[in-house]
Figure 1 (cartoon, rainbow, N blue to C red):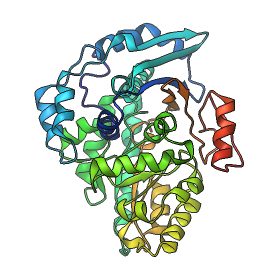
Figure 2 (tube, helix red, strand yellow):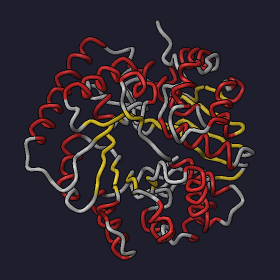
Figure 3 (tube, one colour):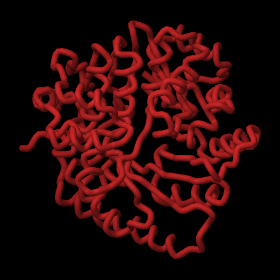
Figure 4 (cartoon, rainbow, N blue to C red):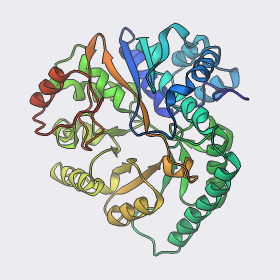
Length: 400
């Protein structure tokens, strides 16, 4: 059977953009990442350990190919020296370990951050691929195609509605929790062919290249979390992370993630300087309507025209929810919708809710204080309490 990952280009774009920034701004950082499954799978993930270890061996034997490097070099925000680094890059097997703890699968990656941060998306894709191979692939594909056509029918019906101030645009964000690599490719190719008016790109860099789509992504939680342990004052870590991003990309990749400490704490740091320089904001936890209204109120307070800004929604979306959010906001602000699992793993089987999160940087704990109960992730109660105090976050739910 083929390896779950056959190309290092098959990862989310934000891995490359965060990777480049960390290489240039904080190359000395060390980090530890841990895999977590948030729901109960149909069978114990521990059963996959031999296959996971074999897949990790194969992953660590891969190198970037010249055609892949040429593609990355052609993206205007990717710098030549970063591509030169990738030319000699290879994952080190000694930096990642998989084992079992009863029925649980335990995976940790630890080492220099620029050498371990890339593991995340590959590990999640590997586990999904191996897990779902034990189910009836033909039956899943048949059901998946039926459901995909229903989504496409809803999108085509929507396209017949009266136009609003800003167009509806959505993207594939489904690599991390897909049913399989082959299924994601089929879904993305089908959407490009059948609803090109609204489907505008994919976070999967390999698919974007192969199918002639725009690769989509800017930053993830790990980027801002890292700055909690990079020597700046904790209260200033979000501003330091945003400033380094501005200096690295000089106007490109201008959508900032808001929920590492929660939307209110983010907006307190997102003053006029950043609000002017960044093109928009990305939602990934909490009530999306409440979040969007807070963003619009913040732009209004700063006397910025929201029609020049974009709100990107990416938290557990499906097509009906994305369309509802669009109808609510589209006459006041540009929008975008990153849809993941409900595109690439809606085949009649329960998807895995898996993540691989940064838990430590430079020997210090880091945390995300999510606006959604169940998404907060940290292992150090003392640090959580301190972080909550520093940012005046009154409620907190911890998940490890």
